[in-house]
Image (tube, rainbow, N blue to C red; front, side, top):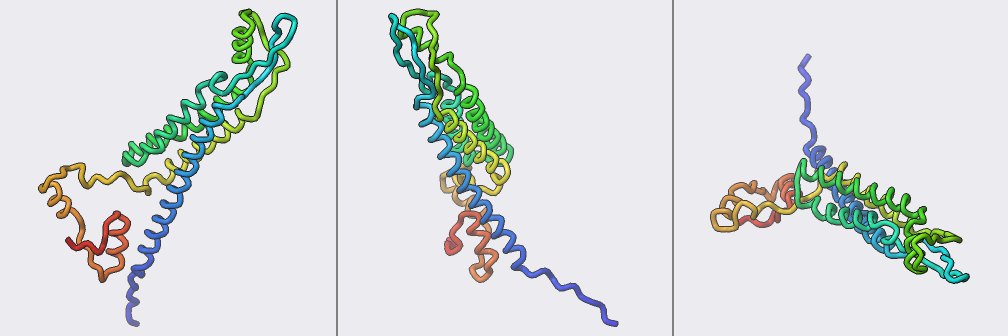
Length: 222
């Protein structure tokens, strides 16, 4: 009985897996950018809106006092800015550095959400406004009410958190700032870069796909 010769795995299988990984990386990148940018923008907008209102007694009458998000707590807005900076910085670093920045992004989102929820239910900011309005340091507000903006800021924080989790899970597949010119921009550096660049055979589809994944032009034979 003749021996059975194992057939090599089809070359397209590896290429398909690589293409699938690249596609999921692009989708997660787009989702993280959208979620992170939208979350930071919404958190900043929500922090500038009125979060609470009440009435303070002045000379036998009452005056309405209000407090916006920054009066109540500046933490959500500050963490939203940190998250936005981390979203940009995640493309400037690689490997362990990228994971660390992704964690900062996720934590800033979680902190934004928690601080918005905690700060959106208190009355300290309104009491301070009442004291300033009446000139009485012991004045407090009554008929206290809260708006929905703290919850909007909290949802925005969750969007930033989601962007951070995507960066933690898929960030290794995302592109980074090109290091081609980091080792020298002179003639020697360019020659070294040309030597390091793999030769692309246009007749081999797998070489073309690899060049595209590296961000190179497979038709550039220089």
